[in-house]
Amino acid sequence: MGRVTTVVGSVASVTGVQGRGAKLDRRKMCRKAAFPFAAGILSGILCSTLKFMQTYVDDDNWIEENLVFDSTAYGSFGTCMSFMIVFRTAQSYSRYWEGIVAVYEIMGYLFNAASNCLAFARITKAEEMQVTNFKRLVVRLFSLLFCLVLRELEGSEVSSESALKFPVLDPRGIDQKTRAHLLNFKSHSRPEQVYQAISKVILDAQSSGVINTPPPIVGRIYQEMGLGMRTFQCAMKLAVVDFPAPYLLALKMMLVVHMLLTPVAVISWATTVAFSGFFCFVLVFTMFGLMQLAAELDNPFLDNGFGFDKMILQQKLNKALVTILLEEGRPVASLSQTAAILGSDDLEEMQRVLASQGVPH
Image (cartoon, rainbow, N blue to C red; front, side):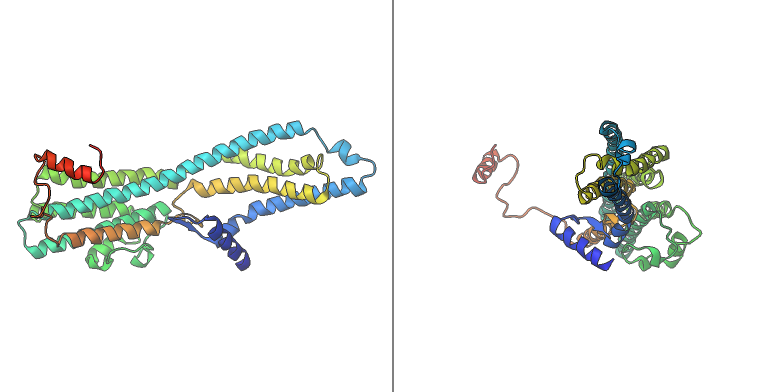
């Protein structure tokens, strides 16, 4: 297995199979490719055996008279099965990208909500230390919320801080009572609990004067958070609802029939034992491999050896939250005294600057 994974890793590095943002566990992928490989080997051995017997043993042409059939029926069957596999793979690929888009949208909504929280706290009536503690608490809670969203999509239960898996911005900075409540092994719907905890923190900040922005504007925070949670609930359907079972059952039965018919179809036109076994192996392995590939793409959130790297998203959000937290301590941006363009009224000066930069106007 070690040599196989080394070869797979070399091929991946040369062909670029493992691209940016993707995660490929070679050991798991080799295990999952074992069944298609075994089916192809079994069918190839059967085909080689039949061809050997037809060529060197069957002097009475019994195999040709009783087993060999017209390839037109086999071609029609293969076309129908190929269409079903292509449709299955296309739907799984669509689910895969839909899941990636949903997670990125959730991250964007949560970042916008956190950014608004920090920005709205600039106009405040509270003490500086109280505002600072509010900002530090908000970024920790949003980081924890996104981590729990990712874990929920994976279908994993989080019963302690050690089971978070994804890095959270200083979870011990949240008070112990809240941590114990949110990560209690008897609790359910942990993302929703953190979402509610953030809502209460923001509401208390409004009542205490930490956020002194008009309520209609503060409602933007709740709107962004609501969009993020709604997207999360929509993404859960990909993690919970599988591809229709009757379709999968019919396709698996067709694959078994295809595995048994392919050796008989190949010996009718193959000329050598080696070529017949190899070509039969390629046909069967390809069909079973596409079926396995579609199963891997069905649920983009599972940590099954192939998928996008969710760790990158968590780290990206953490960096963004730390960045805006540090940005709040810097002075507000202002126009420099040496600005070349004094205002929008000076149209001629603006046109000259644009012309010098080669920008058409």
